[in-house]
Length: 275
Image (cartoon, rainbow, N blue to C red; front, top):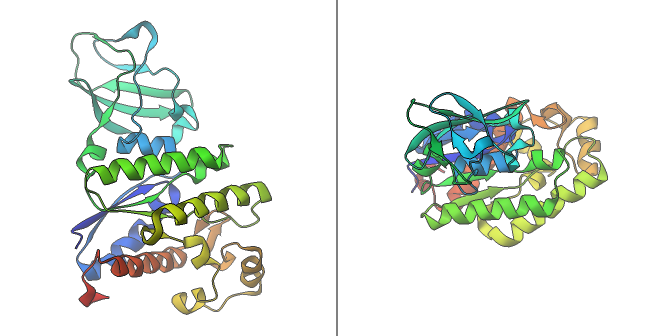
């Protein structure tokens, strides 16, 4: 059985944290929320360490102290959304962080200048949690910013494989379509979900299907509104459980958290006596 479960991803993961804390309390499981609103899968994979960010700077040398802007990386897309993370470049302790101006690296201690030429930042937390049971809910913001479904699928798969190589059990969570989602975005999300269901089998949780299912009102105890029924027919989540087109209310997050907990029980991650 799990002792703790780490959640990685963007806003959906970040916002579901309190709900996961609540539903997993009955199992005595600690939930570690490493979600960050606005992150792309590039950001999340860099913080985990599955696709580490290479360090290149103007002049090829980190100065003896302070902050330096990093050369172009996949993290530059919406760099301000990157959750700052600590790590190491060789023997040097650093913090990587983003802003509207780009991605930056700050030395934690002054010292001699250090030459760099694309070596990786090895993240502290990502390394520490690598072998732990985890949930991956990443990639939707890539699509919001024009990325292809193929690229997102590749980053999810690379991350899941890297974690599993260290002994982690990994559950991948599907994306859901936003309310009033345009056809191109819907097609990308469904392509990612289809690929995930095919590759991960029982270790895949279809939240899109759950949020558009007839069983959802029985889970929440809330009767669907006419708008909910209309959005269900369109394949979108219910507005009554939404704070905006892309996010869920606390009631919506609790419903998804209970759905996830039930799935984890079926997988044997949790104590069956508490199901």
